[in-house]
Length: 317
Image (cartoon, rainbow, N blue to C red):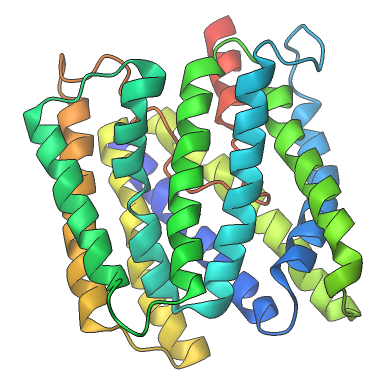
């Protein structure tokens, strides 16, 4: 089996697991507040993450090299988590994915001021076209626009910001710092809010939250393996397979249909994202390649970016 084929299959499996992860989030979101789900998923994720971090032999302390960038990334990660969990709890899955698929467009846009990236005319047009697709999905003038739509859009923006910051400082920051600060912040913030929204949970429900943490870690590891085995330009588009899982899961578990505006908007967004990925994969088109060098799963507390640990190990070989 060729490297690209293996990488593609690993990525497809990873995004299938991510989609199942989001189904559980949506199921629990019908009963529990997003704050409570995030708090316990992060808490239960710490033991799993500790096993991974034990393999990080990078020398250094837990003090960030770039404290202000780390503070901004941490705030963005916290906002992504609460926004994404709320969106999945209140909107059809396909609609949430369609909006969050705008993240690669936003990464390209944010790379201009943060990474000093130059966006030429063709990529600029692709970004504008993709944002039109977002408006098609959102229908901001329609009465159906809700706080859930705003939350999904917030998740896309904050996730893109966190990703670009990782591209900027990730080469100098320890992987353990990049992982632990957002998780600790989520524990503290959600823990402080927990007494306001807490509802008792059964063992089964706690088990489902543990499954969220496990699936997030497992899928993240598969994404790393996929990028190791295949070309980024081949692996990155596999994220769009989530729209198929969202359609299937939404129909089977939540009796959700897919609105015409979601189909049209998602098609526009995906086409724009694919164009940007293909442009970045061509030599000389992008100095930093902000999309291709970012793992294209929006970052929530249960899907930490493990890529920096892998990248640092590779650089030491």
